[in-house]
Length: 85
Image (tube, rainbow, N blue to C red; front, side, top):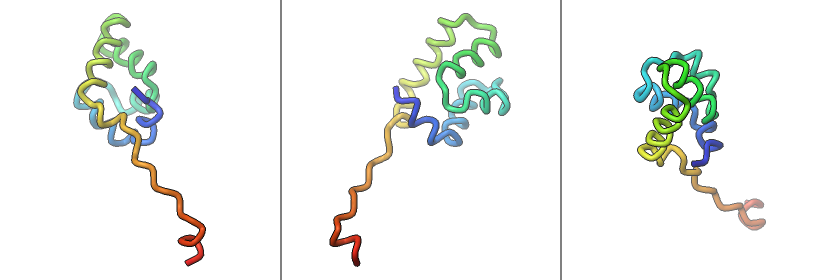
């Protein structure tokens, strides 16, 4: 999964994460700020689960939310003719 894309959509992603892990506070999500390892750590701490359980939960969440990881479509570059008009 491409977590670089997540950083760009963080506000939307935060809502999805809150749906899954409602105990996470906004302050904790600000710490996560689009970083997968931080999310795993916050889940581990907040829910009192082992790291491998938190990893499993995040992996399952990623699988259910693949659309969040899709890179936005690239816009074609303008040609020199188009740029002059």
